[in-house]
Amino acid sequence: MVRFTVLASGSKGNSTVVTGGETRILVDAGLSCRELFRRMKLVDEDPATLDAIIVTHEHSDHVAGLAVTARKLGIPVYFTEATHRAWVRWLSPRKQMTYAQWLEQCRQQAAARMPDADLPVADDCDPEESNDTIELAAIAEECEPAPKKKKPELPKDPTTLPSVEYFEAGKPLQIGDISVSPFTIPHDAADPVGFVFQAEGVRMAFATDLGYIPPNVKAQLKSVDLLLLEANHDLEMLRDGPYPWSVKQRVLSRVGHLSNEAAATYLESEYDGQAAYVVLGHLSESNNLPELARITAERALNGRASLLANRLLLALQHEPLASICF
Ligand SMILES: [Zn+2]
Ligand SMILES: [Zn+2]
Image 1 (cartoon, rainbow, N blue to C red):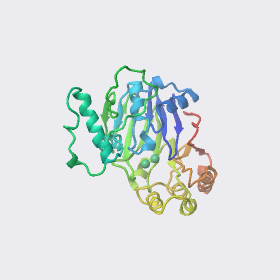
Image 2 (image 1 turned 180 degrees about the vertical axis):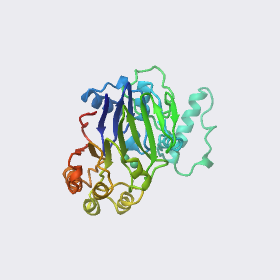
Image 3 (image 1 turned 90 degrees about the vertical axis):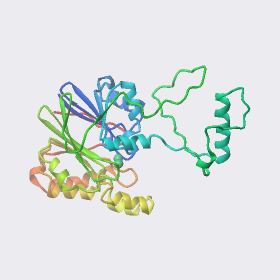
């Protein structure tokens, strides 16, 4: 059985379960662990049967629940090395405090270490290293509240994972019964990738978070049975919408996101029409409407008689899409 289940797609969180043979891979974990598990249950996917998580890139809408989910399930996480490094950096969110607060914290830390010593010396805090603020690692969210403990413990390293496996764009890898072909996509992250998953002769392509569709991506999207393609924004809605100018420029850039129009142009002129399912994904809630995305893509597909057999689906943000089975 080959199955493709989008749990969430959009700027507020992305996650998909790909099943082939006996293997189940979670592609991105952009929702909290709790919400991921809730959605999996909604579509009859058992979280306990997941074998691995694979990550497209380190933006928070793709990794927000990653560490907690991986730890909870005790499964490996597949990254490119650059994405893993960027994720580790990202997972040390910086909390700012005033200089006075920082001095007070140093004083308390020193006191905690040496309860009998005189207090004012903060021996491991060098004021020269600080201007007005100090950076502190934050604690990651956990799925369930930790049991109450008598003594406060140091925060767990939020980047701890059961195991990490590296892959490289352009070099296919095998995860159980599923072969995975990662390919580079143009997006403003450390080393972003899309994927083609293949199991039991079924090919499923995963292409969201890309500013445009370069030739290497077009080559990967050929002869697939399922195509998940980004339709992030309507150009007019984005231009007239609420985002600040700089963010609009970022979204529109060659390393931003694919518009409805760009997705439609690809479907109309270069897509080979082989997919039984075309799924539009990563729709912006501020700059797109599901019906606009659908109509724009439908027009493109309807323009080519040979594509009328393609089923067009929309992956949404707030609810999972029913599993697509082959
Ligand atoms: Zn992104
Ligand atoms: Zn994204």
